[in-house]
Image (cartoon, rainbow, N blue to C red):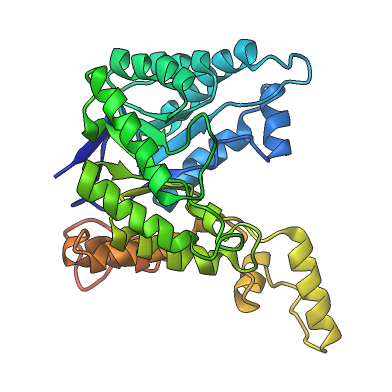
Length: 353
C-alpha cells in the first residue's frame, strides 16, 4: 500500500489508500486575502495565529504555509518571501504540532521553509515544466521530503485528462531519476470548475483511479475549485469530496473551518425579524441569535465539508468502529459541566476545594 509520510516534530500524518483522508488546511495563504497580505507586510501575524489554531481544531491534519505577499515597498518576492516564510513557519510550528506543507512558487522560499521546518514537511509544489523540475526535484531529494506534483507543463493546463495523466507520469519518472520514490509524489490532477466544464467531476474521478492503479501514487487537489463561480458552493464541495475519496483520492488542500457569521448578515437578519414583527429579547446574545435563526455561529468551527469527509472515512472503514465520527458529533459540554476523569460516580462531578 502506498503511504506518504509527513511529520512535525512530534506528530506523523500518513497519506495513503488505507488511511483516513488527509485534510491540508489552506487558510494561511495571502492570495486573494488583501487583509492578510497587508498584515503580513506590516509584521502582524495575528490572523496567521488564529487561522493555524482554528484549522487544527476543525480537523486539519496538515497545514499549508504560503507567504506569497507582494510587498508594496518591495515587489521582488525573491527577496521578501524567503525571510517571511521562515517567520511564518517558526510561528506556526510553535503554536500547533501538526505537520506543515511548504507552499511557494519561489525556490528560495521553498528552501527557507524546508530549512526552518522541524520534521518532514510536504513540499508544494512541482509541475511538469522543465525549469520547475530542475529547480524543485533537487530540493526534494536534498531534504528527503514528499512533494505535490501538479499535472500541468510548459503547454499549460490541458482539458484532456489523458494529457494530464501523461504529465503526472512524466513527473513521477523524472523524480525516479533523482532517486525520489513514487510514494513521495502526491499528484494533483487539477480539478476544473464544474460550472465551466460539465465533465470536470467525472474527469477527476477517472484520473484519480488511473493514478492509483497505474502509477501507485497518492493524490490531492484544491477542493474548492470544483464549485468555483457557483451558488451554494459548500453543497457541491460536500458531494464532490466523498465521491473523490471513493475514487481513491487521499488528500485535499481545503478550508476545514466554517467562518464566523458576518456582522452585516447578523444585522440584516435582525432587521428582517423586526420587520416581520418578531420580538427579540434584549438580553439575547449574538451566538444564541445566530443559532436560533439558522445563520451559523459567531465562532470558527468545523465546516460541513469536514462532516462529509468524516462520514466518508467511516463508510470506507478508515474510521474503525466510527470512533472519530462519534467524537466529531459529540455535543461539547456546557459551561460548568466539563467531564472529569475516571473515578467519578453516577455522573457526578467533583467540586474543587
